[in-house]
Image (cartoon, helix red, strand yellow):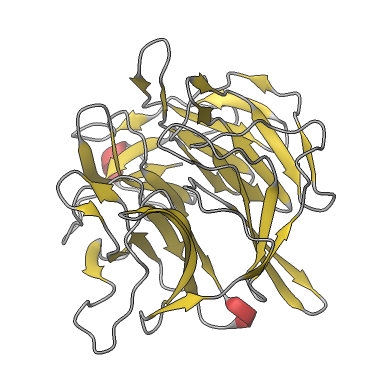
Length: 352
């Protein structure tokens, strides 16, 4: 249990109806308007690259297929994995799942698509400006701010993959303005300090600050926590304390309030190893903690990489944990992923 927590975090396996097939390299996004989680894409040895959409209703724990492939004049975002997805409201409109970049049958992708979350229809988006080259991506920093002209909605990316274990030779930060679809290169790549190229790292935003942890390039795996200030467009390597994670890539970082939860990932050297640990970083105190997490039967999730996770709102706690049946705090939901021997489709909630 991390310092300051009165309730021990618990892994709860969620038994759901209509479970999607096992996959890795997919995305999971929380639609706050409907209290649903949306899974897009991914890949497996059995089915190859996927472009299907599955929607989990968190109230009923049932899945449904979000996009029916037999529609007239149907178009869809091409199949892919290791892409970025975020739920946005372009120009104050209806919620959309914005999907971009990744890799598919034809190789690396550099396209951007939007799925209307009311009609569940796809549309290809034409972006402009200083567009980053095609690449795989593991996550992005999503920042929404109120301004005099409305909401500023932006997605920030850094790094990404050229091959399965080689990073793109690019250390610039790019920002996509969701409303105007304008790409802006916000750093030159010559600033100091600045992180080295990497893939499989996590990017997550809290307020106007983006936190980047880990990643890899070739045989090198990183254990650094970098901070990107989106107001001044500068990187920094902060002084942190506590029990921090070991070097890893392919993990997830999920923001719940001002806390960042790191789960899973792997390291190649000296021997390939996949992790099942959970760390939390307090962005206010700059302190790391390793969480002691209890687990309900049949046990916690296995060590995993290339899964995805998202913040979800509180669901009722159950008395089988020895607690009163009161509302928990917001938590983390994880789906799918892989280890060194298989690919999975389990669903777990980390109750906080």
